[in-house]
Image (cartoon, rainbow, N blue to C red; front, side):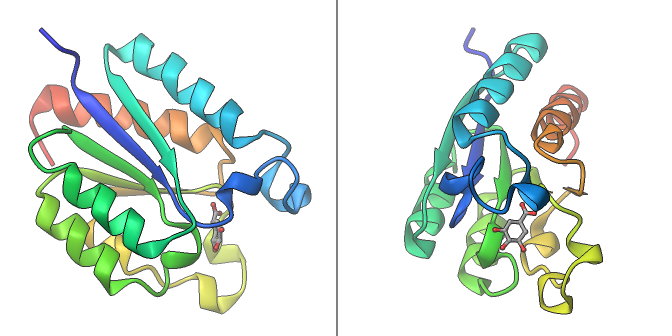
Length: 150
Ligand code: DHK
């Protein structure tokens, strides 16, 4: 039997991790985050498809493609968190458990970062725990799938 597939989506500017404002986002690169997710997937018997794009439409298309293919979505929507109703609609239509991850604690930052459309589709939200938040999201997703809840 195939391991359950978790799609991990990363929004704009996350390709710059490691060099982008390291005092906020840390020194790990996006490749490091992918390696962390692959390791965590192995630990929990999951498969991962890890992607990043700077384009809102591409993110929406990737969420749509999760329907019937993936068992859960972990998403750091980055700058589209606070703006994208299209992304929210795609996540709602996916009918999949969604975990929203932010590397920084958006609630401690500028007010404009503190509202999330994506949260309206999320089973849970992890913010402020650095890139370790991705591993925690994988662990939580494994539990959600095992228990059949969303
Ligand atoms: C990443 C971004 O790129 C910002 O636009 C968000 C988020 C915060 C993060 O903490 O991972 O405001």
